[in-house]
Length: 361
Image (cartoon, rainbow, N blue to C red; front, side, top):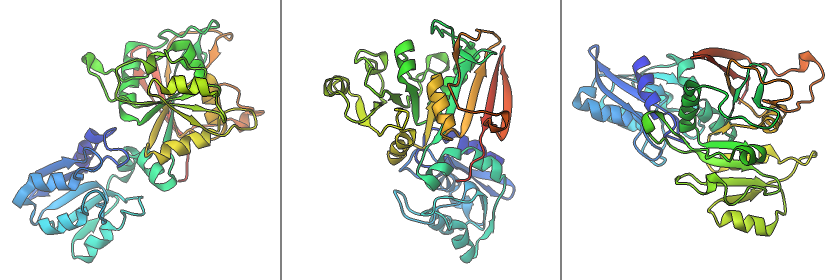
């Protein structure tokens, strides 16, 4: 199963809205077939592994990180292919949470195939958190990301942010962008930094650009913004409030951007739940929220963040700098939002803090 997980990780960020899945075929103690799901609408991991194994699959065991599908979607059911190949035993990592595709393990067991379930289940679920949330709620997995100083500042008092974190941290950020479906910023960040919001990997390689999302209540983004005037296959969506200025809307849409109106909340902010519903409706299972502080605070305050990635640089900016999280309205320490699980990683002089909030989907 560890080998199957290694295969599955090759597809992370490339299979949306499908999960990343890996499979390994073993016979007489030898690996005779490997495969992973590469892109939605193409053969699943089991099919690649079975094709790789060929005739050696007869009487063999297949290890698969996700329960084989038992329905016909854009591809035929993998359970039928497993039977046709003569597989004797199927070892499953995690059950399929998709109510449409589940039931493969029971079907195979009913056909006389030996089925073992729940092997390295936590590891199998960990690589597919966005998929699990998306198929059970219709909403994307939300990752809050920020590069900040030791005193929790993302910019100086003048608004200058520059590069707070080091090259290793920035490389990790771009690998993260390469794996998510959308990247979201508020209009304050868009105006202050004029970011490209693209993916640039090591050694000059261009990664997969996620959909760019800007929260812009009054359509203040300039049509000359860098993100709208660059070479990128990914589109840009701009979410605004109801009844936007028609001239500004037309100017932005003339660049190829899509302008989408959502309701306002009681404090005249954009309805973030409506934004996430729209992303989910468009089959985008993951979104990286890159700020700024007011946007981070709003997402946290409304309980919409699933995962946190904080890149902490060994420097102080001071209390007059820009905070990583805006007002939360918390009165007591007991009311503070606490991560349920957390891990840290050194990136040269920087520290990466990764954490998760407990969710029941």
